[in-house]
Image 1 (tube, rainbow over the protein chains, first blue to last red):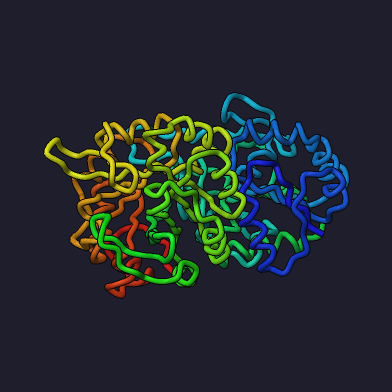
Image 2: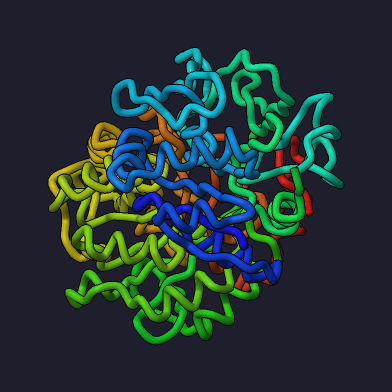
Length: 207
Length: 251
């Protein structure tokens, strides 16, 4: 059973639709016991970093997620903001601690104002990097495949883990895997066929 | 590299999907979920759904119809029209909206925009600007083009950006439905004065118009008539744009 974690500000519906389409068994919940009993966790993301962390704390879920993922090695997939929340800290709306499963800081795009590049980074962009073939949720997905992004912040991390990148002004981390911990900065659930493949790879992943 | 987006814009008159000319003279196009399904199958980059009667008739968003559309949509979906408070916004995100487009509220209720940005983030808010050339230059209109605001498009775009909106949907009332090309002067003016992406809307009648809008500064192009009445598809449009040297997501 997959648990989609409801952090109060997310668009859960699009993740739900993707799971229905894949025929997966899942529940959407903000309760500890459903996180504890799940086989896989999905942390979706539309929302602001500070506000969403506040909700997760109020629901008492932060410690619970840490325990399930770090100690019991439960697979987790963070999507967009959900991926950002997996890092140590975020700078959106002041400095806030994240769930802290992976070392790193979530920073605003730092783009040269002279360039004709705009923030948020919105639209379809492709993934790059030699480790694409090693990241287990990117199975059967090629370098250069486009996915849908909407974000103004991205993770910066020196953590030793497998990473794929996307270029927007410079290369930033768009997918990572650290053991049982996965994140995508883009929205697989909004990225049509190739996106659904990622969710399928995640739910069939066994640690 | 980021790709340029082509976004079909579905206008809803509380019964069916319609197409307007200069915000009037509505022509019926078809059933909302059917139209949404077709654009989903053609792999549009995104979709925008605007209820053009809700604000005018002081109605709330038609949640049942929107939910039906969201169900058909495996791409980003922007919803606009009749959104007046956080209850509307929360409900729309719950039923599958990815972004909320605000026009009247941008002028009349800027606090709502700030509240949505705080809760859902900038990327969830699209500021919809309806502009028209008048004797006093370009002016912005609200309430589906029925009420003139106190702002010109540059002023309103800057206000939208400062409130935290993540994108601007820039519509030309004069060009809407005419299929004679985008208002390039308007696009140039607005896209050069803000740091957030601008989606050009209104007037597209041929694939060359997409290229002109992007070359002058648009980050994405929105269209309706060209898909309904000309028979251009997402694929033919993107192939053309790609051949003109623009980065597109080819299908």
